[in-house]
Image 1 (cartoon, rainbow, N blue to C red):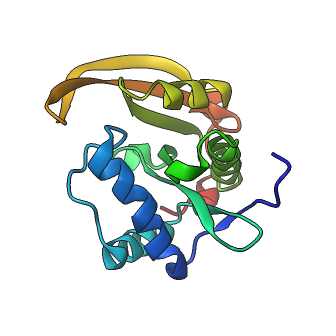
Image 2 (image 1 turned 90 degrees about the vertical axis):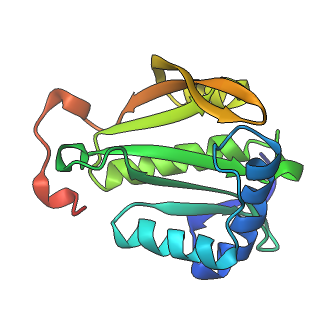
Length: 182
């Protein structure tokens, strides 16, 4: 990437651009199993919820300030024992694919999760999204399982791959409880 691109924290002002990017994946792909695209207000609520819980939500901007992609992390499971584990999500504007934006976003998101004291990151990826599998593998995620026929979208059953990456010291030491407040 030689362009003037910047990863930064998302703001509520980014909700419309995030909703527009995500709508493509909701309507035209199996990258998400959601089927009704959330509007700007719903995306703003989601952004507030994620960040209020202490998780990162980031965007990639070009030199003019246009949002080219977004990524966020949230708790992997609802039980308190999962509080050091996150699930990551990355979405890139369809007209910006192939420019290294997903890689930069995922690397920044992983770094931010480590800074916040999280220890494991998971990616849950539909089998129909091989580029996402490659993206995560290049960022150090390893395959840990397949959920067979776990999702139904666009007239087909889809397997889901689970990939995992250690963050920081991973399971090699106890967490510093004060580093994660979620």
